[in-house]
Image: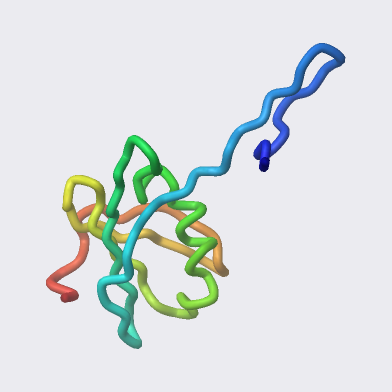
Length: 99
């Protein structure tokens, strides 16, 4: 069993946290961008927005100069900003019909 990442430990106990993991699908992939959709269920997975660092890390090998658009858990369009394979922020509601 994976205990997760150790964040605190003393002689009495240890605290571990599980990395956030989102459940998403790649809807479209072009030379200019990748479009993903948050699938949930959110009682078992983090939202794509909340797990942005993990999502970018997961897709880092495919991003190479492309933008990363997504439909969030509410179906709203947004963009995940990234630089050198690392999450760098959001641009909410900022894409025009990439589908």
